[in-house]
Image 1 (spheres, helix red, strand yellow):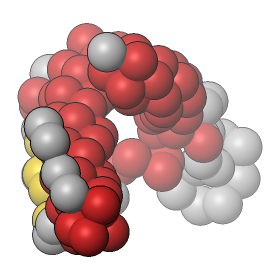
Image 2: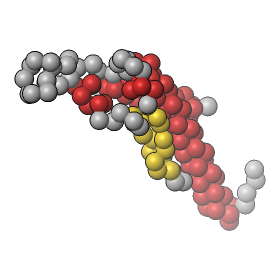
Image 3: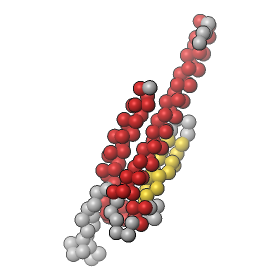
Image 4: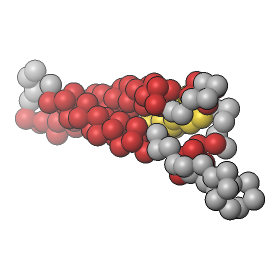
Length: 127
């Protein structure tokens, strides 16, 4: 594109705004993809007795504006169990009788997906 020196400032501002919006959209796409990937991983790696807990994982975008996105992965139906299964817990009467061991499945998925999301963003921005 050609631009006269008198219009250089406006031209640069316009190009930077377009570029920043493109970068924001690329990052938002990566976040959406990563949320879906994390949900799917949790469905596969969650403890299964009946399978209901594992199938209840959902992903949703809770905030989304021009330059910001926030995606959440949560267990829609069995949210009360996430901490108990992830960290383990004592028995009903507070003793070790009937206690349940920790079954980490959320933290490993979160760690892997965060790393993967960063790599996706870096890869997209290199193009």
